[in-house]
Image (cartoon, rainbow, N blue to C red; front, side):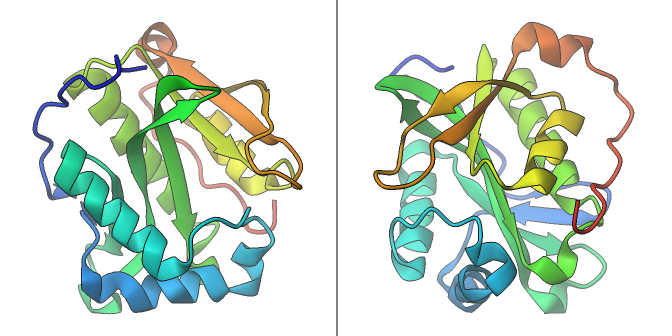
Length: 196
């Protein structure tokens, strides 16, 4: 976790992995984000919250305020597709305590190819190697088996649950700390099979 209100060092605004380009979301990503949120496969795991345009603007505001937020994720080999997903790190709170949160959301056409794990691995490297975080957390719907497997493949472990959305099942709370990150395998994680 990061101490509340500490300044996060400037983060590279454009990051690349082996197959992905990770960049702050732009207004032009609104259509991709709307497609993601209206995709029936993704809607199963959406706990509600702000509308698509509001959530995208919130993420853009995080980049302005914190110099950090979820990325728009594009394929390096096919940039003309635009954003195929969104995810990364943001500052937040869990049960009132400040936390560094990891999240990811991909269009279902791109599930099962390891993109979420590749993006999450880059986000964890940023958290622990550049930001010197002590821990990273993730919250997700209990029924999202593929996302759970992805989090576990990149080193996060289930530590409990949090009733964060009134009227919804409690979200599962995952965590990885700096010691666990340092001890994990440096091999890239396998892709989570589609439909897992």
